[in-house]
Length: 360
Image (cartoon, rainbow, N blue to C red):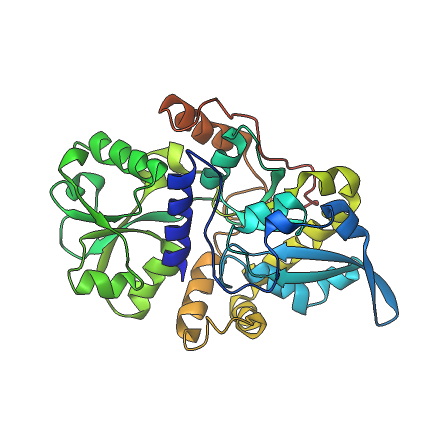
């Protein structure tokens, strides 16, 4: 699941040179794609429903992929009644074929899941998407390279002469070139093969590839669950420029402008959900599993619980509070993109806001 999500994000970066589009899970609960939006996000936010004789403001939240531990706080907030306490009726939906960001920008969802790296494409476009990152789900980038234990790829230079499964994304390849060459290796000698992998530990064990880009909180933990010995290095540990924010919660700009108080209530309740997951990872994981209406987590309960134990510590980590986006880190990555010709302009200072977060 998580690997497929990263594959979709990487494919987005490839398409970025022409148009911002993120492929996502095929089955959707939304019915229409973002291009068929019939009402603005702010108007949708004003629609209300009655629940237990309370008038609730409807909010649609679009995931980036099938439910996983990046999303746990949302399901906790929903099932613990935190959203209802704030006067909200929150529906969590799957993304349409053209992606969560487009759905959010078009106003079919007030909020969605995105990532800072793939957001860059939409911000750099001649017709930028109408979205702003309003909260960091995780405080640090947990992605990196996983390889077979003992193959010598515990550092980037070790990828020299080895096989790497790629999505041929410009940002992906530029990241790898930077860390491999910066570590004394030679990226030009890395053999690139198409990434069609669905189970990273199994693919490594079968020698289908030597190295794969994964998020440790899912792919790395899955290796432990499957008892497949693997090495791993984090991009952020090799070069701090890659400690960017992934994933983030984005919001529709028109909605933020017209309904800032509703946005703050949503994020206040969401923060409570993630804080609960930090303190109660087992219960939170069970809520995620119970809330999954896609069936994607069925049979993966051990992985979900193990992933939750790890990722609960990543939600806030060393930040002052959940959701906070550090301006320097955000800007450092966007400056790197511009300096390396991955965007046509310098996007520093664009695309995020901490103004809608609650207190500690």
